[in-house]
Image (cartoon, rainbow over all chains, first blue to last red):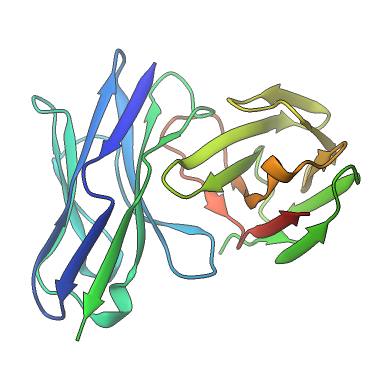
Length: 114
Length: 114
C-alpha cells in the first residue's frame, strides 16, 4: 500500500520569493511520482513527473522537484513565484506494477501575495 | 491535447434523487476514473474502468455506480443522493495501464445535495 503526506496545508509567500512545497511518501513497492496543480474552479493538470533517471525533474511554469529515495521525498520548488502561481498543489504516487491506483496527498494551498 | 469534458459544472439535487454525472474524453484513452475531492482529504477514487463495460471499485464506492458503454464516455451514478455526497467530482482518463501514464482531468462537477 502507498500513502502520501503533504507536510503543509497552506503556504503563504510573497511574490518573487522562492517556495518549497514538501511531499513525503510511503510505499512497499517502487513508485512513480507526480505533482499536479489545480487552479481555482478547474480540474487538476500535470505539473511534472518522475519516472526514472535524473532525480531532478523540471516541469511547466518554472517548477522543479527532486526525488530523494533515501528520504522518500519529492519536494516541489520554484525560485521565484508569481501571483498566477496561486493554486492548490497535489503530490501523487503510482506503483510501477500498474497505473490504476494513483494515491494523492491532501494538497497544499499556495497563496502568493503582492 | 487531451480534453476531458464533464457535462455539468454545478448541480443541485434533492436527497433521494437519482443523479447522473457524465464524462467524455476525446483521446481514445483506455482508462477512465471518477474521483471525489473534499477539503483536507485530497482526491479519493470512487470507481475506474479499464475497458468498455469493465469497471473496478476504488476506495469509496459505496452509494455510487458507474457505466461505460462506449470507450469515450464514463458515467457516475448516485442511485439515491444523500447530503454526505455533496462534493466536487472529478473525472479523469489515462492512456494505458502503465504506472507512469499521467491522469488527465476534467474541470469537475460541484454537486450539492439538499
